[in-house]
Length: 264
Ligand code: DGL
Image (cartoon, rainbow, N blue to C red; front, top):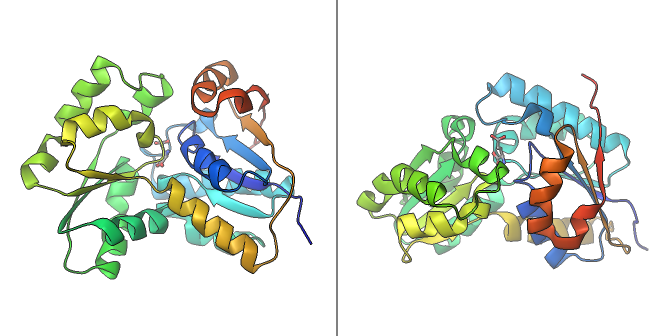
């Protein structure tokens, strides 16, 4: 038995495409419906109440398209709204915070840095998860709000991005972290600048591969695995800009892009 329904994925913008790319690598036989809620981007500077409202809206839009599982490919929404989404939806919901924290806890030696949006860092979600997994780890977290607009602009390896990364990340180098969690799905797009700023000895953790492994296990355990393949992309604004950057991340799969209205 196979389940041909798509896996639903959402983020505020292009960041979740880093999770979609990891899912596609691991589960090429699944179909994917991706929603980039670009009309409401950024989520990361909004209050938890607003993020919950946006996340519920995006999720119910995807649920109405008959997705079999929802991946919350946004740390901000995972930190603020995962419980609300699990309560509201009749399908399995996978967030990105715990898979990322588990990967970091498996690799870290002693000191872990976390970077994310203001909202994710203020939520303390990574600190709580890491402390639960490995109480002896030292954890420091910092918000890097300019990383999201830089990624959305496509300035992935731009000199300005390198400058911003150096300024934001200098305190981590002084603290001597050995692992840095990229706690926003936009940040893996800026990997070269982030790695250069913290030094080659620091392991960068992004939750994409761990999320893909968790989704694979969930599909198998609930008999939901599909055969099909294909990616459908939807955005709530700025389709041309989104598709330009999506093409860099996803290649040919970015061609099928629709503008949608979540009507709130
Ligand atoms: N990519 C999202 C995250 O992982 C949020 C970016 C934003 O909209 O601020 O948190």
